[in-house]
Amino acid sequence: MATHLSDTARLQDERWLRYYYFTRAAFSVVWVALAFIIGQHVTAIGAALLIVYPVWDALANYVDMSRSGGMQKNFTQGFNVFASAAIAIAVIVVLHVHARAVLDVFGVWAVMSGLLQLATAVRRRKRFGAQWAMILSGGQSALAGVLFIAQAHAAVPAPIVKVAGYAGVGAIYFLVSALWLSAGQLRRKFASTP
Image 1: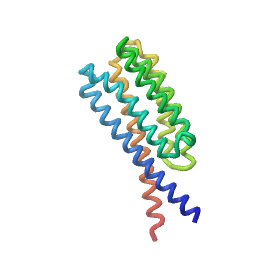
Image 2: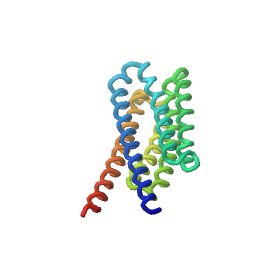
Image 3: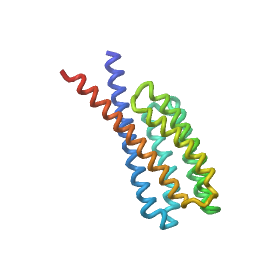
Image 4: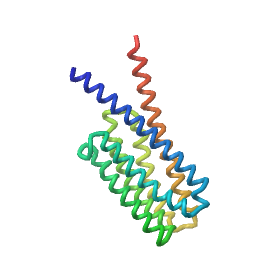
């Protein structure tokens, strides 16, 4: 009986994770489209998008952390909520001072959030599949953050374009993870069918 309840809880948690990954991918796709279509041409909208992105990340991590057992079981996500909220505030300040410096802020955030995402995925891989993509995503995010910092004051495209490219890659990783979880559920369903 206890094993059945444990399996049921695991399946519910896996469904949640699949939904969460699909939602993160969809948001990122819409955000990237807005950044490329409007944000790079209209400064105020580009600035708003640069603020919305870490706010969304903080909200998404908070909801997932809450749904997945709270802060005690998900310290890395709890810290990511705090870091993303702090970065949103930093982006607001930096946009008023020197817009190019926003890549420095996003660089620091990409390194921090990438390492925290990597740690979360490593912890989750024991219970769920599809974490290899999140591990890769976290590592690549940290590397991208270093590149953002290195390029912050160079003659590169506008920060919104650089961040949109970063967000687009993140969307792919979330989508791959969601699809991988879906495929695993289908495999188990067909394996249990007589």
